[in-house]
Length: 356
Image: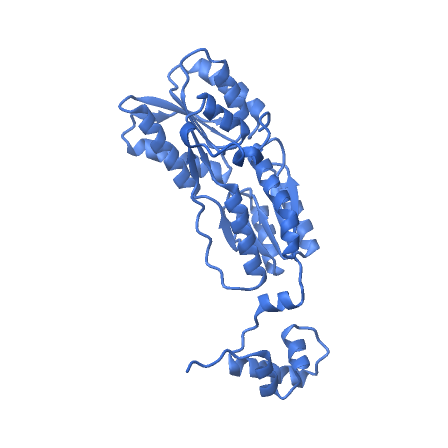
């Protein structure tokens, strides 16, 4: 017969102390003589006792406090993340999970560090953040983990950081998928793809861009990549720069938008009388859905933020309970064409059509 898992009562009996004394030692509540502490710890080691943190949290009716740090501004995808979290907040409270949603300026490492430092002072249970590649951000993540907080990067990993895990799509594979779709759309013809990113240093955008360009190069170079546009995820910048580049370079046959600002892209395409390029972009929000339906855009690669939030919450809860946790598997993105869009009712929470 298998040996039964030792309980706290077994530890108390082995140490020759009361259950209450053993419980105080296990939970580091103090008020126990050092001699008794040593006996309890020796009994724990002898018996191989492992504290069930999840059960203890349940018995104590503990409320977990998790913060999500999301870039602010007109980016519809990040608004979609915030909407998902706000919708989940009442239900999570029933499960004793308090969600905080913090907003910081996009691509602003100093603002992100300041937010993480405030969260460190708040001493919550875990943080999930959309990161920015910066040594100061890495140091702030390390500081949170050093004080026992669970830390996940969300949507975009942070180069050089050491979080407990990353939740999101594999951005390199997403970029390679875009490259393959662009090659298929060109058929046997040559072409020139205009990439659009938020900023070239954004980790997720850089990985998507590299994946797309590598796939084009591996196909022999009949379809090439033009110099990129950095739109800072702002629709007004993307609109102005895309209008200029299309006017200057008539050889452009396709556009790959690896970031946001796509409402501006759609407005430029809507004004073109003829000769629309092939278009692959990211994130199913209201204006990208409308562009698919109207034929202005060909493909949308969506990273399924509902799954990202659910996975992040499950991971944060597991880490707060000190349960063993395998690295989260990458989220598999959805590929949407006009023909396979989800029902409009499902898409009703995907953002404001006039923003991004």
